[in-house]
Length: 278
Image (tube, rainbow, N blue to C red):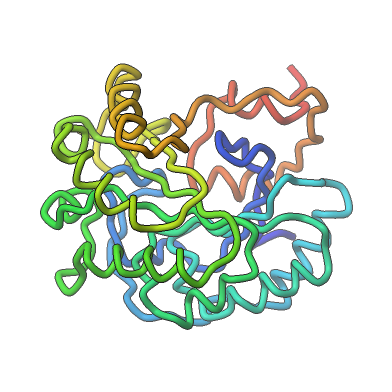
């Protein structure tokens, strides 16, 4: 029985991604308006040991007998860096498998040197930065009253200085909040001073926490990308649709059920990576 591992996920960014959930639903230090996992009813501000680490390792080992993902990705029911055990599991994966490791994080805890130390062995870290304007940051990410965007910016700077792997900075675009030229220029001034491999412009793909959040238009995303390019930031990508696999994966009903308990996937998305009988 699988409780902590899910997928492999049809990921628009990572290809075939085997998810590992280190926290319990929904443990997060933010309540982002676009989150596909639903609302955070109570913010979790303290790092904890949420799960049995040996169970997680055993589940990963079992799945890898039949599936070879592009990445083992730490995400799921909240913010993975809230787990005090994430470093141990990443280290175990790197020693016992040949699969790359990705950590998807909202970035708020990256200011903590212990967090950066815990995730330093990952091959790829994807932190989110939706705004460098504190008011807009709070409207989109809705953290605790004690948190502000300066903590996130300081954490990203620290990560870029101390981490040797790849960093994809994700920016979730919401029209009317963080899509203006003025806002993009503020982002440019900050991002010019940190090291990252790629800037990914993302937008709503599945229903988010708040119904008023709508997908940004391709025109808006292209305009923002062009402004970054004109200002010397060339490594900008608009996140597109998941590509269909040539060789489909055999569907494991339990792993897919675990995946869909975290967020819903359309039949079209599932058909791109799984063998599904009709």
